[in-house]
Length: 232
Image (cartoon, rainbow, N blue to C red):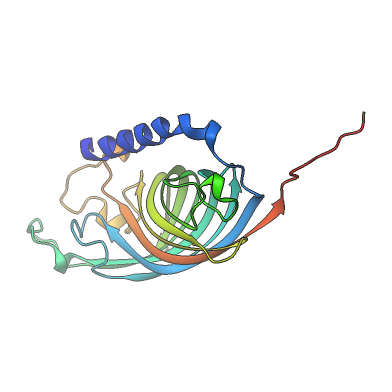
């Protein structure tokens, strides 16, 4: 839990420190973008504490973003992903009488996050120093719902992501992204795994995370008015 809080604080501090650059950022020529991505999903929880992609699943998402300027964006995302795991992968020993178990879970995740580009992103005049590619960080809040063996669990979540985006054309973008999402519910992998070691777990100490490694494409629209004339 302490490591998790430390990562959150570090990400917030980095994004806050960079906010002072906002006044110098070039205005994005388009207000919005719409995109989609596909890739591989994974899980860290009660039966997997190391490699999140030990049992990879499929994931897909739809994204809608508001482009504040060349460095900042707000983005809503709706994703679905498959998770699976087995106690046979565990190194620690189960309590006496426990049998090996496995699970499959389908997760639906809705999130809103802020994104920060390390470089001013875009295509345009050279004096704006725009770049066609940039790494980026994202941090947000969301809600996740999982269905496993006929049982449903839901909880709020905190997604964190690192990625790289590349502008193919003025309005067309590619991205590759790795994300980790902390879910404040210990039943994402099914209720049979929430108390696997017979130790009660509070929601803020829950062990469930899911990971996503995706590639995708987006299209920008809603051109901003560069020279607007108003009539009183």
